[in-house]
Image (cartoon, rainbow over all chains, first blue to last red; front, side):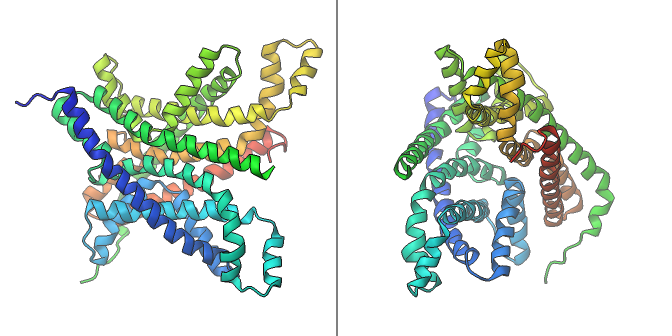
Length: 217
Length: 222
């Protein structure tokens, strides 16, 4: 039987880290694009569309991510789409992050004084131009710290992809545990690895927040 | 061939759904009670003069907040037995949820305590109250009222995250769903129903706690 040294364990775990990062990055970028579209719809003047966006956000924030993952994993095949664990995790986490990002960004836009809308409208700008030239540049400043903060939540959320069988950090840890019977060491190391990914982001977000608070004072 | 949704097949499992819901709510109640208590103690410790105590609490908060809940739970359930501490699945789940919620509660309570004007405790001291009653009777109730909505939000998040405890075979709502879908072969329908139950629980929990808050803090909750 093969003996696993501590280095073997660390090496195998480190090899899984890029998959956690990749899933986080895709979900963040994809979620960001979807959120931007939802934001444009959700801030517009059509009441039903605004309500639909609110409902979308509420649904994702008020149900467990694990259930969302299962619904995508078992739901897509009903539409005759072949799902791998990779596809299900990517689709689900993209939708999940789009809901949270929409909420964060809408909050930043709504924090702007009403006069910015009125002023830009009085210049004859139409809705999209108002957003692009006046509203979003200002809201972005406020949105960045909480967006980085959400990135921490997203990285942690990717751990759930292990449950549908996507081989990222947590899944690799489970496989290694079954092979080596050293759960204490392995899950301790895995926790540390997540910590080393998330903690710098947390610090960064906090620093940005402080700087913004200073600037707006 | 198109798939037809069939929810009728799930009716016979009504009892299971109810049992799972009870376990999910029970775990949430346990974690909330102890997690928020630890949160209050931890937030108070963050204001102590002992800097080692402050650093210890801050380290705990950062460690928990920057690692996934599921890894924490696996560590308690699979990892601790190698130190000779064998927990049942239910105990490990309750412990993991409590420790997780406590870290967030410390952060929330710390903000709440900071929001209470210092004049409040100075006035209490001038009335001859000792430190413990000042904290317990004057500062803490105001701090709780300040951050009550944030605490309710965190309790709801804990309830939703508890779906993960099914992975160490705690028979909660999600585990019941896993079981039912393996028997009925109606995976999508089962998970849809359970997702709706979670949604209703989250809405009901928020409403109920907001209602309780209005009573507890006599209209002080914003």
